[in-house]
Length: 546
Image (cartoon, rainbow, N blue to C red; front, side, top):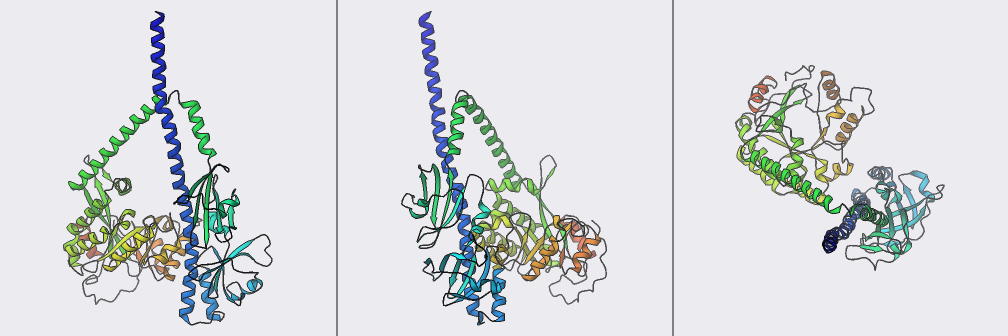
């Protein structure tokens, strides 16, 4: 009996040891993975700060080109006005200046900058940009600025502003001069050796400083120029892993099995949804509705926006915000976009031949803006409908513009097809004025969340007006979404808005309903190929049937 108990105990011990091996190995792998993921996060922050720095240098280069090209004297009235406009393009730029003999000759900030203390420049890049650090503004003790200068034209930048948007608990951030190792901006604990010694970094700029117990990303943005450091303590990872080791090893195997079961169920559900979405694409379960777009100035229907819907096999209709994100994650979005454009051809080919000046808006997903297949799909749609038939507009959200290089190529290719581009949801998410100057947008859409408050006393009541004014200043047309009353329609018409959309004018409808709707809400010949009918004068806005 004693031998049986001894054997059972040994088997239990062996089982416990075998069970502990995968748990301990998993802990090791989890820590290594946590470090890799943390480096990804730090790289993302470093890249974002780098883009801020490069954007500021880009503003200087643009200032240099435009001032040289304009022929205006830098310190003339016109020259100062031009410099002031440049200073307003970025929140990071405190002043634009012109230097002569190492001193400020004039600036967009007036006399305040005349006594600016520059000192010798700290670095000079191959493109001729000089960097002055430790710049002092008279009367602002305790604040050091950086001045970027090329051929006399200069920008005064507060370096803390370059990193302040990215400050968060557990991160140390810094900008440094790679020539002298001096920090120009910093937040958190940053040892001096990180700025002066980059030999510990691998080819990605990563290293672990055991003395400081930190994960560090160190990048030099340009040879002899500014560098970026982003770091986080290892202690947070160690504390989390130690806690796991102390409390969860006894139940690690059980927890692992539970997680495995949940993961398998989730994967099965994901694949099931993916298969269902593929089936919907292949079996024609998608359909389009068309919401009219009106000209506010003469209250006529001049176009529509195509809205995708999925009719589930049980008869329920699924809106796009519930399946488009999944289609993007599952790699099916190009198939969905292709199907949308096929439906446009199927629904409206005859309609558009009858009304060739009709404007049709089609929504693109963020992933569509990263693929050069998208312009080809749009070209195929135009070819199928017929050359010169229909005026097409693609609508893109700012989220799709984050990968600037690829998005710019796609946007340029779409424009080359004669298709206008509208920026949708501006001001509701990833808003940046830089997008409006980087991309050649034609139309700026005012989101319905701002439309609903425009005629009220709400805090956001002026946002719509500011967006309209911004669009006008950039030479863009404006389309206001979500108009639900005559009061709103008249308000935006009086603001000079051209296009309006909302339930006041018409709800989303089928292609056949649109064909019946349009003749009742447009002038004869208005949307024909050769429109010779003069626009009717505004005569008040009449409610439109839904």
